[in-house]
Length: 159
Picture: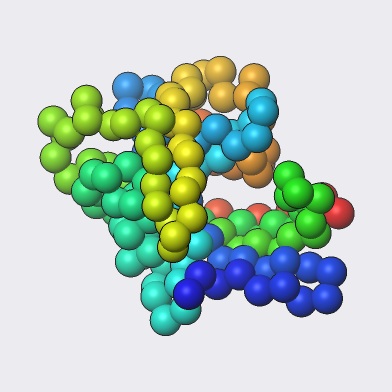
């Protein structure tokens, strides 16, 4: 069971996000009409964030990844696309493909069956030098990715 709980007017969730950089570009997933997020998903009850990261990448990309290093944590208070007040805790990891030759196997329009629900993923690569031109959420993560920061912790309150 995913860690996402509705408490009063807040939706609470625990997620993992992958920072996958290759050829000076970062892999992103289309989120809404004109915005993006990093590949990842919810941590399940009883699962640690590292295991969740590997599981989510396998589910979303159908490829095997290694975790290079822990990147940081973002505590985020925001309104999601459905207009719900959301409190999220997101663990970020730098990742790489287990087999670099699998790079060409990335399915950029992948359909995932996630706990009985069909989820459409639309992956693409964004140029690191032009990252600030895109709505990659949370917006603060763009600088982290460009600078390859590690051990960051942000609290973002957009409510």
